[in-house]
Length: 128
Image 1: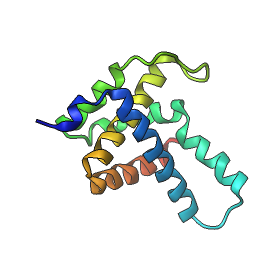
Image 2: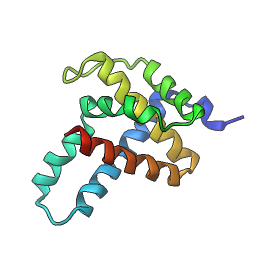
Image 3: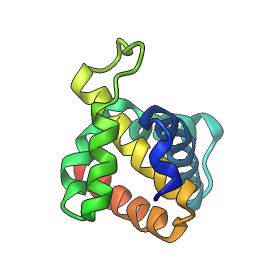
Image 4: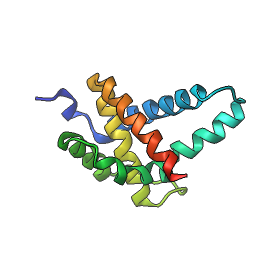
């Protein structure tokens, strides 16, 4: 049995939030020199719940059935509060993405995390 199956989707999303933030920061720094405030503004375009939520439908076609199950668990998780900056559906979709990234990271599948990150950045570029 998968030991990560016992973790709550919100715990996985908690880790996934940090993983996603780090992936975004590394991606932005890798694009070349920029001032910290410019990097921060650019990072917000990726990490906002609304931005993450827009990526999920396009990303789903590239996921395995097991990854789609993790995504579903994250989407169905009910946090104690919802932010005012995003609609509930957007927040649930962004939580789903973070849940998936947290799961893959804790599972040690960093190759898959990187594959999804590259796909996310490609999809986000077309979303601009």
